[in-house]
Image 1 (cartoon, rainbow, N blue to C red):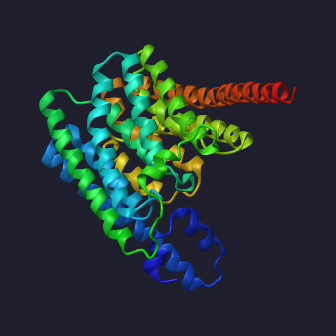
Image 2 (cartoon, rainbow, N blue to C red; image 1 turned 135 degrees about the vertical axis):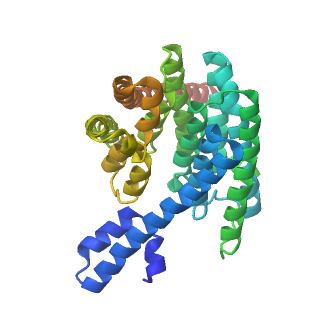
Amino acid sequence: MSFYQAMQLGAAQLKPLIKEESDKKLKQKYTGALITKNILCMLFCILVVSSFSNIFGKENSIVGVVTVILILTFRFANLDFKIKQSAITLIGVFLIYAISPYLSNILNPVLGFIINFTSIITIVVLTCHNTAYANHIVLILSYFLLYGNSVSSIEVYISRVIGLLLGGIIVASIFYIKHKKAEKEYDNTILDVIKGFDINTQRSRWQLKLALGVNTAVLIGEFFHFPKTMWIAFACMSVIQQTTKEKLSIRCKKRAVFAIVGSITFFLIYMILPENLITIMPLVAGVMIGFCATYEWQTVVNSFSALPSAVVTLGLTNTIVFRIASNVFGSLYSKLFDYLYDKVVNLIDNRFNNEDEFEQIEINI
C-alpha cells in the first residue's frame, strides 16, 4: 500500500493497521498518513468554509460547512444508480436545502414538520438505495445544520440560496468527475430507485422509520420551544440505524452517555482555558475527530465543535444543560420510537395476513 493509498483510509481502518503492524517503517508510514490526511483535510475545510463566509456572509458560513462535508463524502460514495442522474440528484438535494429548512423555520411547527418530513423522506429514498453506504448520515446532518442555523433577513437568505446552488454544482461536479472514471456503470436509473420504494421491504420501512422518527422528535422539541432542536435530530439520526435491536440499544446508551461526557469535559475546559483559546476549539475538534476511530470518542469530540458557538447565545450553563437534554431525549425517544414503529408495522402485517388467510378459506369453501 502506497502512502497516498493509506491516506484514503479512515481512522477506523488505519489505527488497527498501526497497532498490529510489526514493521517499524510501515507503522511510521501509516501514522504519517493518518496525521497528514487529517491536517490536509482540516486545511481544505478551512479554505472552503472561509471562502463561502467571505463571499456569502458570515451567517452563511454553514453553507461552506455543508458543501465541504458532502465533497468529502461523495468523492468516494455513490447513489447506486447512473452517474449522470446521480449528479443531477445531488443538485436537487441542494435545492431542497435551499428551500425547505427556511420554510420550516418561518412556519408553525406542524407545517414545519410536514415540510421537514417530506424533504427528509425524499432525500433518503433518492440517496440511500444502497443503505450500506450510509449516505443518510451526512445528508440529514447537512439538512438540520441549515435548519438549526436560520437566516436573519431576506437578503441573507438570498445569499444562502445562491451559495447552496454553487455548493450543489461543486459537489455534483466533483462527484461526476470522480465516478465517471470508474469501470462500473450502474444499471439502475433514478426511476428504478423511486419505484423501488415499497413499504413491504425492510429498506423502505427503515427509510420511513428514520424520516418519521427524526422529524417527530424535532416537532416535540419545537412544541416545547427547545433552542437547539437540531441537536435532537442529530441524536435520533445517529441512533435509528438499520441494525438489530441489541445494537440499537447499545448505540442509544453510548450516544447519551458520551454526549454527557463530552458536555462536562467541555464545561471543565471552558472554565480553565482563556477566552481567546476557546474560539479555536472547533478547529482543534476538527483535527481530533480525524483521529477518532470509535463512535464513543466521535460523540465526545463533536461536543467541542458544537458547543462554543451555542455559548454565545445561550450562555455556558444553558448550553451544557440543553446539550445533555437534547442527546438524552433524542436517544431515548429513538429507542421508544423504534419499538413502537415496529410494533405498529407488525400489527398491520398480521392483520393483512389474517385477511388473506380468511379470503383463501372463503374461496376454498
